[in-house]
Image 1 (cartoon, rainbow, N blue to C red):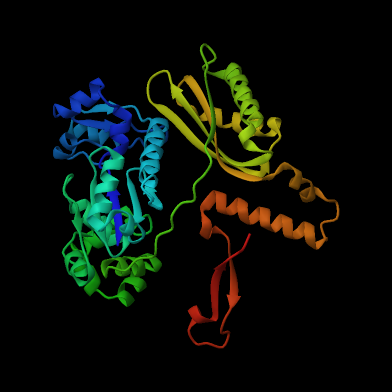
Image 2: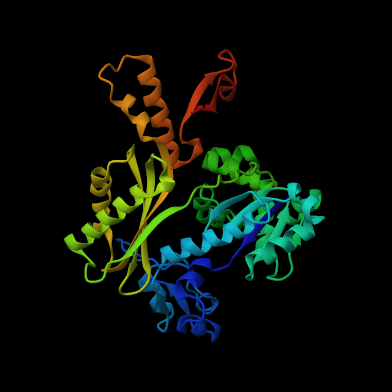
Length: 401
């Protein structure tokens, strides 16, 4: 049994803060929306229930949102606070023994089978997760990840919905196709399916996998699998060691002075004893803005680094993307690389040596996985070259590190 925990309007709640004036306005029925970030297309983020009632939707352009709701209150986006609150929620779920797979901020899955012996059943596991979170959440359970998501969206905040076996597939057939929008691969299919008159997952399933694959490719095949209640197994995240530094910048809110503050943070981070001589592969640069809200950007180095000058040079270029002067600057490690002593082999003058080539390949694989996930680096293995089915000739398998 897979459990899905859904926190509605998580980013809006995190940006508004607890007990603030904006939170009181939301409780009073005011229309709130997360202000658009910097970019060419100004699109609003998550919106409150009062804003949805007048037609404002997440992803709508700012001009259209204000035209539909002139009294719309824009909340400055705060990805720094949102990431901190979300990490706290994930840690709370992991404290009960759950191996979590976060899909996005406010949406997480975990397997309940291994926790039944500790708590006595699926209902007790869900109750333990609710107590660990300490905040209202919609929780659903089902045989697959997609079924659990559909159950969580249909559940009430204090009453979980659990689906089992064939009941889950029959119940899923009546759900709207808007559920496909929660998957990055199937979300682009929604406009086309709506124009075709497809309203429920059951209608989508009856179209057949060949027809959907022919029209939409791999995304259509995945949508058909999801409509049938099929899904891939969970991929729980691996616990990462938290290592971060932050500093109030004072009057050094921009320009050269802010880059000097960044240099101080880099030196402090590399001097931490918890680093244990390891290099840095990916870091997160964040800032709390003077105008309110925050800014956050993930930086992956081309090579795992421990040189403070190179790290500072790579990060200082990202400071140009700050939308407003900063009140505080933060730097945290997202992924560590190998120990610094192992880096010397990467710069051997003889590139034909097999050992050097193998080290470089391992470094490249680790770099790709840090940027795009575990499936970013795969190798092709010829299984049945004479087969008439193309999928049986060559298969993709992960590259061992």
